[in-house]
Image (cartoon, rainbow, N blue to C red; front, side):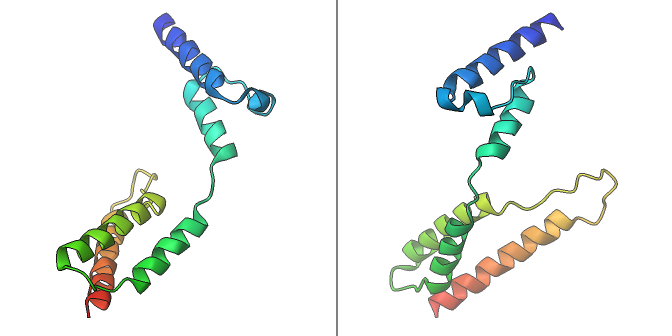
Amino acid sequence: MEDWWIIQSILVSWILNTIEPSLHSIVAYMENAKDLWDDIKERFSIVNGPRIQQLKSELAECKQGMTMVAYYGKMKTMWDELANYEQIPQCKCGGCNCNIATKLEKRREEEKIHQFLMGAG
């Protein structure tokens, strides 16, 4: 157990030493590296709403006008970036058996097909 605390102390020190010194006073000190990381993430995460909107607009306006391979590659790049911003929620109740994540992923894939075909036409 002592090794665990040593590693935690090293990680906390590393995190705190990589933060801009002027921000130290607003970052809560925590002994657990994950708690510290989560606190920093919550305080300083930038909402990506404008980028999500931009990607959705680009997808809606994307027209083939290029080889099918290049067109698909462009669409896939935007889909992948959008998926990073709009991650499918995972059930955390422990008793869920409705497969909602699978259903949402299927819906996302169907939407990609529609977007692809709208731009290819």
